[in-house]
Length: 114
Length: 111
Image 1 (cartoon, chains in turn blue, orange):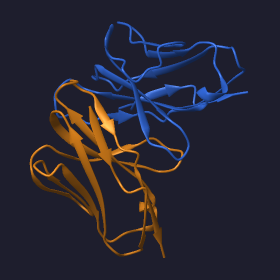
Image 2 (cartoon, helix red, strand yellow; image 1 turned 45 degrees about the vertical axis):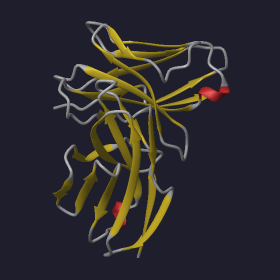
Image 3 (cartoon, chains in turn purple, orange; image 1 turned 90 degrees about the horizontal axis):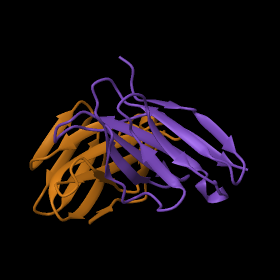
């Protein structure tokens, strides 16, 4: 019973390139969340998605960042024209539908910008 | 909006008991979660409280008082492997499904 799968585990990009982070939720989970974490800091909410819908993107920067969760395939967090400040760990979590369900986290993608 | 406060760091001795507090302010409370995160790893779910009172799960217990906006995580018989960050997360009923995380409490267990 696979957990939340994120890939790649580590991603290195040069300034100005694009970064694509993928997340496959646990089987049966229809809700996906993306978080960003800087070293020694807490998880900062970015976006909450259900299949083909963005429910809440209040934590996502207005420019360069986008997220999707298509009908088929993984959820994608896309960062265009990356800058040094984008270096962080990006965690994806999923949960089933229902009010009192905990989120299950993937192992994260460590993004490094050169 | 939501505001969540936890102590930044705590230190305790192996075999002892430690209590990690979390206070929150929210416009519409719909549950509180505790997660454990070891350095460089993913957070893992520990406990969930939606009603007042104590939830016990082995060495870990979590308490909630909704009227006080307060929760604590109690860790008994501390082990070295309990050294980790402990995250309090509050779910509100104005943003269905979304949880807001505190900055976490880094617990160091010493021999």
